[in-house]
Length: 414
Image 1 (cartoon, rainbow, N blue to C red):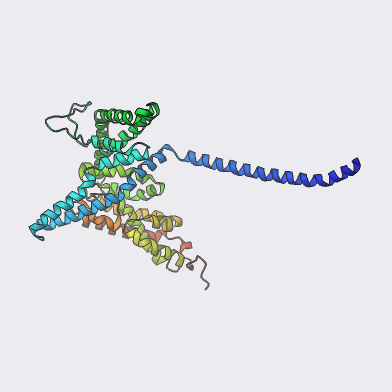
Image 2 (tube, helix red, strand yellow):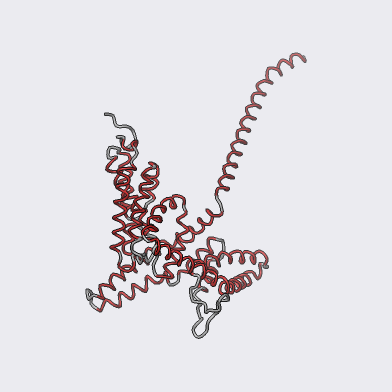
């Protein structure tokens, strides 16, 4: 009986063992897979340094404002053209009121830009947007009318409305987000709606006026002064270096840090001299793409990509050309950078060439060029096109790209 039972059990046991072992192996694989996913997530988290996090915050704050920059900037450009036409009697004096209204509309963004930035900064850091807008508005010193002044605690000179600008607002609202969260955490729920906004605005308002505005004003003046000095002294050489290295900055996402710098210069000077120089990088891409189109005309797959990406590249949207054409091929990306450097050198020859708004590039930037120097900007575009074309045609076209291919990437049978 026992032997009979033992035989039966012996016949069944190996199958159970196999099932258990299979289940164990499956479970082990799941654990290993999960561990690999956690490890990959950990590595990704490590790669996201504080610097990249800061760039992401800057992008999230300013990208929603780009349509406003473009709209207001183009209206300002149209108003400027009409104003010049009015000055030389090409338009009747009755156009004066319409031009004034256009200028007023375009100023609605830039006159209150600190408030918009304050609202977006508060959203980005988890604070109340309205409170961020108040702190942005404090920078304008509303209600402070001569002869009443607020002294700068560092040098005793009167604070100027808007001193510190964008840089000051970013810093102030970032700090405000921590203060507001602190009060939300420690104030009783029954009085939180009253106490937290009151104390947050009071503390950060005073802190902004007496400390952040003087400090940010010094940083702003130093930054703008340094950039103007580099462009004035370096001239074409400085323009070449900036135009040469801007595409690698775009590829790494580092170009986002320039947005508050552009806006600070527009607030202080009325235009940013950096943007036309940096726009030459995209023009170099266009020249390189045209060279590839001609030299690799038998590669139908590549020419199809170029045909799709080139029109938007001419208008200043360079990502399709960068990631779809030049960067995957390697050498054309480098020669496109050279073309951008050549265009930047040409722009660097004109010290007062700048853009009155940001958000566009290529041909779309022409209406935003300050001081009626659109012709100099077009000269830079032409130089970048030619430079990128020649460098790519003679030195930057890989042999593999010239191989005849169908649109689906398959080799053409000869």
